Length: 312
Image: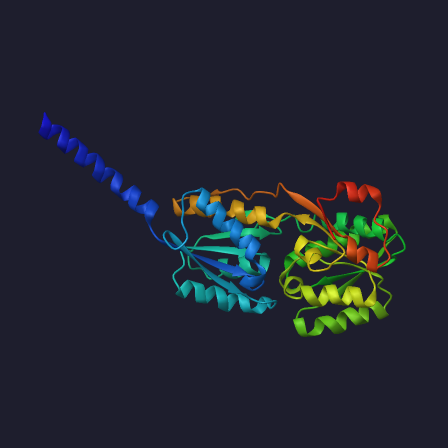
């Protein structure tokens, strides 16, 4: 009897060993990002928290190889190829250009998007509802600055997500008695001059989306709006924390936290194509009272009540 029990126990242990080994296997996450790591600490911390809640410990079970295009979408292809050479086990990307670059390596490495405007074949992850929120940001701009007539928006035509946002703005503007102007910018070095020209063309307000160029140019955008005393609505809270007027958008840190679940499922054998793209569930309205005062803008009381945070 003892021998039989010993045999059965040994057989069970052997049967369980591959699964345990798989769960403990050290893996590499290749992150393709739009901004340097120092500007992305909050989101990265939420990713680590999500993985920790699933039983993974950084350095013990995984490492993050972080690569940033720093505002230049043309760099994504080379960065993705570099991560392939580093033998990452999974890509975690932000934005359409980064996600396409990872997928187009044709390396077979699973691609998970922490925030993407719309679904892409062969990729899983979370959408950021970038385009859908464009009309809401126009409404907010009109609410805080009812005198605005012509609204400028930066568009990089090489980014499908930026074009999608532009179409939403273009469609919503007439119903608000607004005109919109596309500010075609594809390189960081042409941004300042393009903004100056927009103001000369009569643009008296801005709605800034969130993509590689705008994220990397956060300081320039905020300083320009302040210097020219024009109201601007942004797509994420970090712009307002840095001095922008107000933002309405997805709580991006929550998307990074939820990305951990996708990484866990893919590492356990799930195919990205079989995992549904999930929508954001948390949004936030953030207002900078000091910036509003500097622009002599009176924030409507109902916006104060609806806001998630007032930055003093």
